[in-house]
Image (cartoon, rainbow, N blue to C red; front, side, top):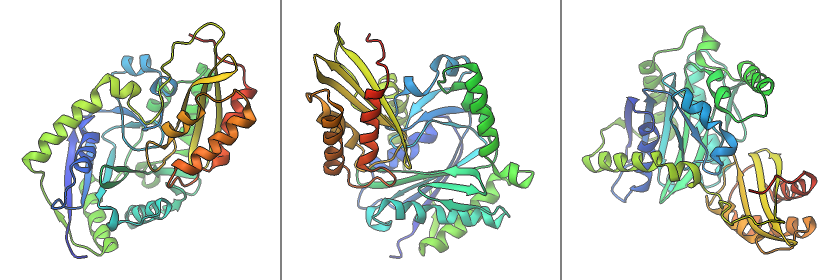
Length: 363
């Protein structure tokens, strides 16, 4: 396989355009289009939530508005992240046959040149499964994956500098005291190239080093390229989609609670922490049955629609934790093709937790 991989370098993009570029290239990947690596940075800061997250439960949107931070949602799993010019995004848009089939192996394959680049600058980076890069006990970066149309997408970044307090300021937490604890934990356990080296290498130096190492890793030529006029138009259209309020609030891969909750109904919320991330199950129960449900979290799953299938399987069932746990486990087995760190027992634990907590007031 000697067909070159195209490299697109696009620095200082408008905030949401820095997400739109890889989404658009993935959606329109055709038989004559090249595999592409995008190296991208945003001009202005913003916040991006994962595909399966509920924005209103993850973020303090009023705080984001006060701070002038745009919010968008990506078509890749994972948690909410604060992004700014201090980060250099690395976005792969590849044909399925050109990356490992198994998702856990694909993550390891993707992070290898990222780790090699960090090490070449003197940072002893290591891969921490499932999809993180660490220096000792400090997180130096996370990665995400998704299949968008016919393309396999892998995303991550070089964190040159980081403002952990900015993300803590917009996360939805129960109190100012807890927010301070979250901010302190991030300052302690999240790191950057600047923190590890004393100063951050220039973007151009990182890009040059990374492209050389990626070419060696892929055993294929990696050549600088440009976007076509058709791709530019697709990116502009995707940017509008990602900025649309309906997409941001309700467009992710979750079954949005849509029933009118009548008197006598209650909303049960169960949570568990899986190796893949937080799993949250919401159940609307009326007259002894589940009348609506949603599965949310910061996990990664293939296919992306699987959480909707799992939630739909719960609707109409008796509000019995044992029965619902069994249905949820069966739905995971039937609908999930690949989800490293997410097993049926994690959905079972979230369902059981929903019945251990006090219900939320219906609205």
